[in-house]
Image (tube, rainbow, N blue to C red):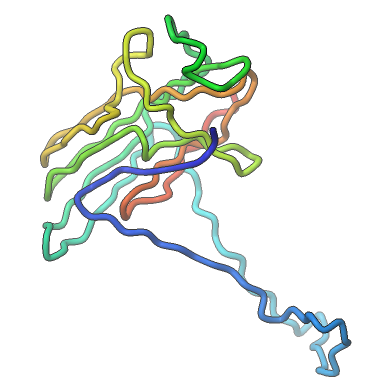
Length: 196
């Protein structure tokens, strides 16, 4: 039930990063290479972790022009977080949680200029302190918090905005620490979930 995804504009790319340890020895023998004293040894700079935005704080994004598309820019924002929320009339198989607790994340995406973009629920997920994620279940219908964010895609022309609530379900008592937006050339971007 836990994983992650993203906003799907006309342009899409995936970036991967890797880490390795080139100093590690695997032969079990001591090295004869002299090591600098601790006072002169340089410490590699730690990679900077992006700071999570506050709920309500917008993230401005830009997709560069390609031969097929013009440059497109806009804003994505988490504008609300509710836990728990009341969900009515959902069958037990709508979730695999034994004691489900529903969450509603209200988001808003604006297409400022450029090409049309298509937005979905799937770019959004919840992140937890134990490095796990929960994806949206892709649900819409009566009984869920309104207004609903599109599951099948909503097209935004330049100048358009769309806001709505995305439902998530977790085990009762679980609380994410961040909301994650990732897709195409955007992200991951994170918003901090308040402690309570």
